[in-house]
Amino acid sequence: MDAWPDSNVGDLISPREESVVLSFKAGAAISKGDPVYLIDRDTVAPATAPTNCIGIALENVSEGEYVPVCVLGVVKVVAGAAISMGQAVYGADASRRILPLTDQDVNEGGASTYTIYYARKLGIALDNFAAPGDTGRILVVK
Figure (cartoon, rainbow, N blue to C red):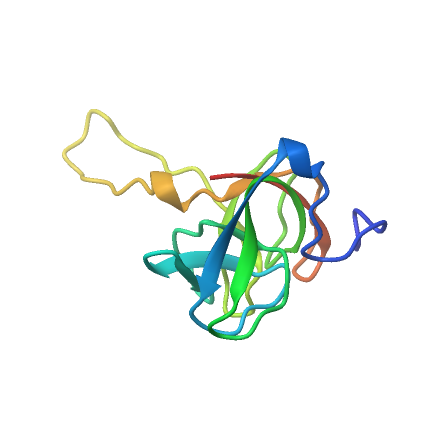
């Protein structure tokens, strides 16, 4: 399902003047719409496993080129699972798709320890994604 058919994956939907787009060097080939993460100072690569993504690539680039990355704004992406509107999302699966970030129950009275991934959140789903491969909008909030 395409929840936002008026644009392509990786398109910046929010007005440019209301978004934050930064330029990074590509440490590998990157496709428009890929969730990307920092691999070195000012260098990003496409996420192919759950990681702390910095944003969504807005252009196709080869390794060594510079890529614009949305770190704040609305972008069209591909889901790797069912995601509900308003749910937090992160990147990514092996196919470079976004995933739902589920809440983690914490027993504050117990003796167990927990790891909470505050940096894992990439944004919020603005559309419902019914199944893997569905496309729609997220608000990137890094």
